[in-house]
Amino acid sequence: MAAGVRAWEAVREFSLGLPEAFEDHPWGPEDCVMKVGKKIFVFLGDPDGPGGPGLSVKLMDETLHGHAMAAPGAEPTGYGLGRSGWVSVPLGGRGAPPVEMVCEWVEESYRTVALKRYVRELDARTGATG
Image 1: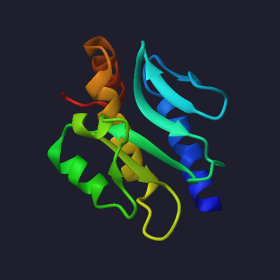
Image 2: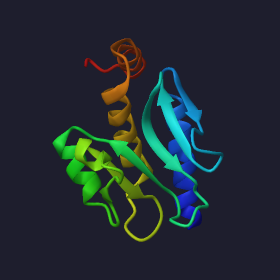
Image 3: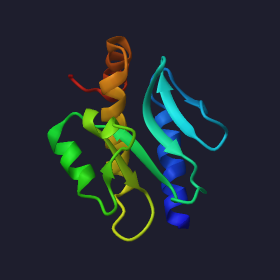
Image 4: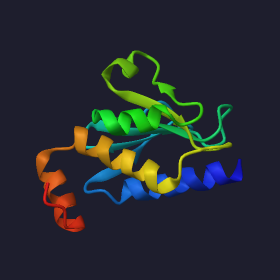
């Protein structure tokens, strides 16, 4: 499980590096989410919780959504969020997706909810031609 916690921490750090992103705990200290403005772009939860480290991201791109759903233990996010493209993926265990891939999913989720000016800032940082 230590690898899952390290992956969780790497994803948290990556998320905080996105333009105007910040960490919030709207339901208590054990429920970590990343936001841009008022919108959540990744649910990180508690890496030490009973389910182990994992995350939920919003993936509207069919290819990325399919890759995320193919990860071992992945499932549509609960509370009806899965109907809107949210996918929950465990970060620990056998066959867990590599951190680089998970960060790609986090970036896509960010791009889905962030204001266009923040997406342009991200594109300028990465040299993308969006």
